[in-house]
Length: 349
Ligand SMILES: C[S@@+](CC[C@H](N)C(=O)[O-])C[C@H]1O[C@@H](n2cnc3c(N)ncnc32)[C@H](O)[C@@H]1O
Image 1 (spheres, rainbow, N blue to C red):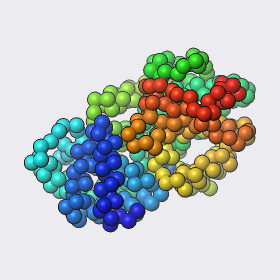
Image 2: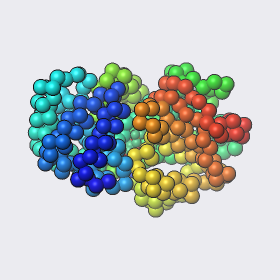
Image 3: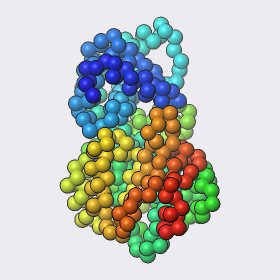
Image 4: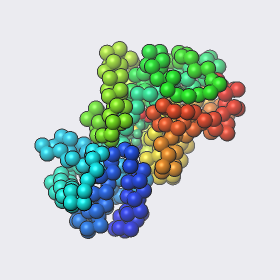
């Protein structure tokens, strides 16, 4: 994409505004779009920086990151912006918001760029582990081995902390409608658990900035923070490391030296363009042990859909199963079987 092309930005922003309608990022993106429309120097420079700095990322992820980075800097500044709430605004107020955002970008441009450079969207959820729990517990019971688990893009590491916790599991499993499956808790025979994330490991302040301010998302954030605190008191043993998974050599040697036979990668790869995404997938396929399993969940590409697709890679078959679609990314919805669902369930569940 040519970062100078205003029409192109406009098309992406139009879509993201539409998609983010229920996520309360709308006012920020509308205002940023207005700044580009007004030929604001600082907005154009920020758009160029995004495309240059995040070359392997999709334009949607670049824009999402801009919103989150601006929110992050706003939250720690002495004058936080009021742009990230759901409040409807009148035209007059819109003009005021445009001027306010432009002034904010001018004052904080270096800090915002620094956040963009060192981070990716780290939005996470305390409910996503339930699927990994079910899939991996049944798989390892079938093959009768213990698991060396790697959670790629672990964010604050909530999934590694929650695995094998029956209390959290029972709290959330009934919100996922999964017809005709035995969803009773089963322990995974875990040997070691590892988590990986980007340059600066995500912290609570960053996670809060990645959440929209609507009631729905603030409720999910509270849930996450409570579970995180509980997990920290339980002291589960796992290791979190900073590694850029786009660096195939680094990822390969990390996986091989730890004999990783279970990989979880939830809501990470969609941030990248197809060639990079495929390179990361190939690296995981090539470096997981021959008895391994890889669970990959990504949001659906349909911009209006809040659901996600579940794929499962079985290393012994070198095969990716199109397992299911889930109607909600916090797994508070319905699981619909994919084309390979029956085949997978018969063999590994
Ligand atoms: C949207 S969050 C998903 C977090 C968690 N997996 C979940 O589903 O709740 C994506 C995470 O992947 C991490 N990530 C993105 N690109 C990465 C990279 N190149 N190397 C390591 N981690 C990366 C981000 O920093 C972020 O914490």
